[in-house]
Length: 196
Image (cartoon, rainbow, N blue to C red):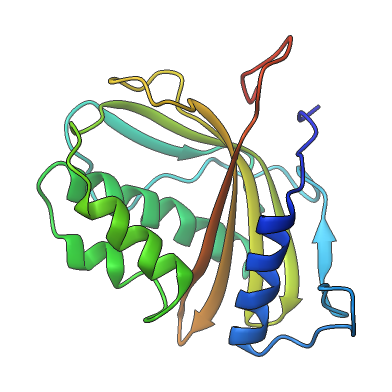
């Protein structure tokens, strides 16, 4: 069972802003869409884990455990995996533009990624594993991917090694691009790991 995710007012406002920016219909006064369909983690047939298509730097791995089995949800989760992989390649001296190309221009996601890339930090090595993946669908072309990101095997150790992550993605052509990326620490407790 996944740990409970604490909602924050800032995250709700940011999500509402992005949805309005992307043209999703909002119900008056609620900040929620009237078309979102949320699928529970692990719903449907079991599927093979997702990994990036292109090689990663030595000692780096990105994996999505128990992703959706069928498209378009599986393709959207694959876009999150590829975004994380592109970010790690850039941190190891790769192409930063390849990261920004995976975000909608002018979006909160593009700004957050650009800020992250501008920071001076050692390149991380280790396993980045997404667990408890759930897909919420606002429209056919706008989805929310929620997952627990386990970075407990990453060196240097991040300040928040286990995070809840939320990616709002919009479909463009054959692919998905990030509109917003939100993170919350899982927080202290008897089990501070994502689990399987």
